[in-house]
Length: 313
Image (cartoon, rainbow, N blue to C red):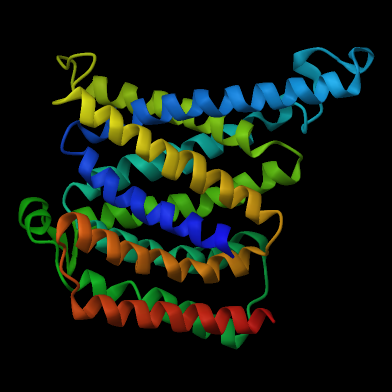
């Protein structure tokens, strides 16, 4: 359980540090730079792990790098799966999230991400025809209702600057899109894990491709931008290192590791720890206020998770 708590604490702290890092660099450059650094680090780890396995098997069993079995390397028929992970797991998840994070409290972002397990359950039903009992449908309803109270608090500057659809501001709507993308992406990640691929290879590839897309997006929209558009290099690089450690290395790889040992439902249920940690970090680092509607949203989400997890038993 220590590793589960560590995983959610790392994710919650990454939202706080991410908002801090946005003070030094534009979001798409930040994501691209961070993902390229993290992706290359993960591929280095994967390469040496693979090399060690080959040496243990003996030189007589080695083959061309293009013909490795999935657990050792890459098979071309899985290329589309890897591209989908890069798109939904990195590019369409992080770029919208960090754009929205400029205009929202990190605490609200953490709370809104609590809807992820319910989105995943819905995707299981919609895409894989997984049957849902009446209790599970009730749990899903409560989970989706749980995201509404935080939205009712408004987002101040973002709503005034970009407008809104009803009570949902544009930054909040963009964040919801990122959350949906991230929730769907785990199905693609799990499919590659089941094919025998290393979590280091999956995440490393996705981060490099997604990071390259994000950097391309930044320079396309800002053709006169400098190659390193950062206000202060030292704090920026320190925050990037912290984000890579917390999110890219600890959370994503620990989640993939734990996914092999615990059910997805159990890990989803433990996600209630994330907003708890997020509340602590947001109030500590940014002095963010805890609105009573956040507590209502958390209560609905926790009740939904508890019902869903109980129905699984």
